[in-house]
Length: 159
Image (cartoon, rainbow, N blue to C red):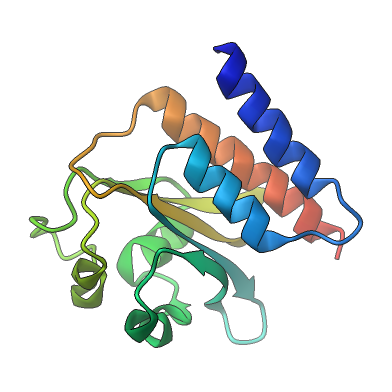
């Protein structure tokens, strides 16, 4: 791992080790780390079993209500939560698999990835980031996002 990538991970870890976590800052750091333009962080509401938006960046305001609560199994975030694995699209705009919800295309992003937030086998939510261009995330990038998700989940497990 390059020195800059290592320092990015350290910066994210430091943001997660604060007494009061600024989730917007954490998401912004992750978006920056992966050279993305948009992102969402959803936490699982155990009472409703819905993914509820905690913070977002770069999402058009008119779309936020559509992203505020996501059922497990619906859209990229919901499928990542259901499968407990990374869900990725090289180009969300041209995808015909049905994984991406129609409203997701209104974000105008292309290369997209959603990862579950899991710690000790427990699902805590999802994190999703995207680029404005077609992009295939590398295995190292996918694993890195899962690791960040595990760190976020570790913090959430203490609350």
